[in-house]
Length: 312
Image (cartoon, rainbow, N blue to C red; front, side, top):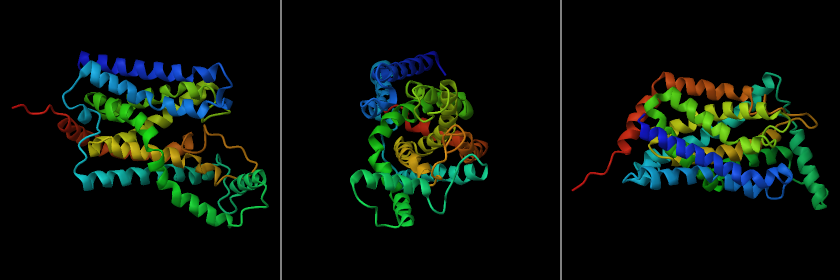
């Protein structure tokens, strides 16, 4: 990487982190995750990587084809791009779901794959709050509906997910690829994970863990999941598959509540995709992608996509 590239990465990272902490300050001086502004703050925070990337592209580097540099364009070949979008959605959902039986087998996720007792309790509480006797639909049918609706989350959550992906995979990962696939994946994953610190230190995602452990676990998750998103970005030459994958990942994250056993505690540092047992499958996938040169070949493709426009 050139000195100019390092400067751009420094500006991008500093700005994304500063904005994330700035937006989180009302929570730190308020009621933390219980603050009524939390949802708004969390959504706004997801835009900070995109803001940082736009600042770097438009004010620092100023390439001629800015949309290409961010991975927003071109949207072709259409069939291939759509294929990667679908693949990203499916892979993200599978990674989230497969972490649950693995966690159950390892004894760290209290599962109830038969009666769905935790989900049933949630539904009963919601029905009680609404003043109705119960939900007349069998619990198994509701679980199937929940699973069938997961791909829709990729479209519902797309805009906030794009706010992150435009920065992390749209701009940062390709910028780091001259260092090599493994360093680029590790560095971008660490940066992405540490960027979550303003909310993680308040108990987000890891409510029962000390702050240092929550941040460390989030970094581990971001390295592995970010590598999968990164492969989609580089292989397709577009940020859109990674954005859809991220949106689907966020939408599927709460499914651990559907399959948990009622009354049992779920330690997310150990169970779910956020914990070590959930990292097994994405780690195997990432090792396969790197060992077979998938990132290296994609790097060449991505560089070609970002060549300057011909003049004349």
